[in-house]
Structures are given as C-alpha cells and as structure tokens.
Length: 76
Image (cartoon, rainbow, N blue to C red; front, top):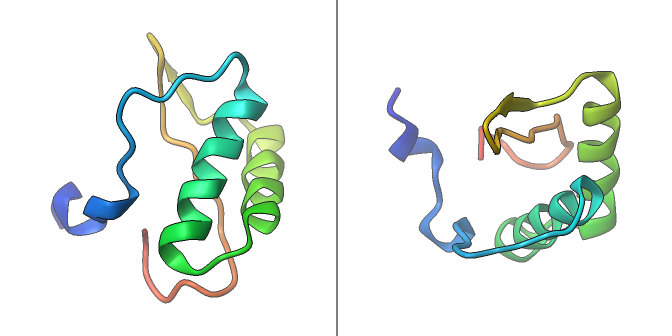
C-alpha cells in the first residue's frame, strides 16, 4: 500500500500553526470531522487518549497522530 492511497486530498491542510500539542490535535480533529462525517470532540478525545498512551511524535517536528475510531471503515 502506498501512502497516497491513505490520504484524502480534502483532508490535507497546509500552513497550519498551533501553539501546543492540544491545539494541533484540535485542528486535526476538526479536519477529520469535516471530511469524514465525525464528531470533532470525539476525534479529539481519541487522539488525546492515544497521545497519553505514548507520543506519536517522531522528532524534528514530525508526528503521525492517530487513534482508533468507531465509524470509519478503512484507514484514513
């Protein structure tokens, strides 16, 4: 599988800034809610819970925030 198969063009946001991790996760949650018919609060809670289990940061400003959600039928 190629990463391009997982990405949805409408869910890519460029030039987003956030002053802390919580705000960055909130931006991701809003994008997911808007593009995939999810509740932003639900997504934010799931992302926050996943981050508490262990950071999804890889270093040098790169992270791959993710969480398991009820609803989506495939990896998004």
